[in-house]
Length: 101
Image 1 (tube, rainbow, N blue to C red):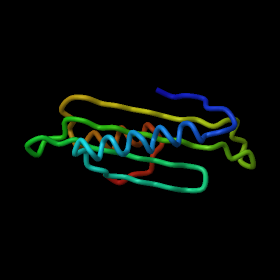
Image 2: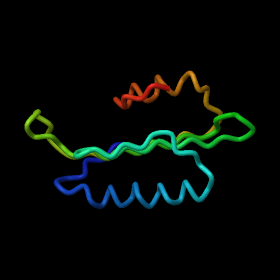
Image 3: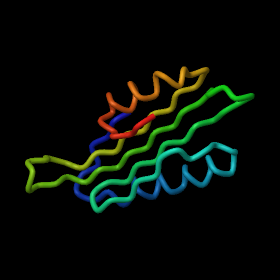
Image 4: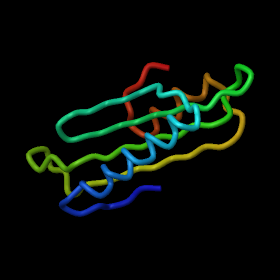
């Protein structure tokens, strides 16, 4: 899900923080955590018996008006089910997340 979040990203950032704490409490493994001036990214993986069976991606990005960006966005992805680790790179690339998996 991609949401336009207007001029203030604070509500979306609070959701990311709240979900991060919930996932950590449920034994999800954090694999990516980025805190930049205009972007917050969190990627969590759930594993059972060595198999990836869940992936959560949360991205909140503020517009960089100097580079022609038009608005703030929040992206939330939740994939449930067995995931081939080789496909994770393809998924993150489609989301324009620079992650080496």
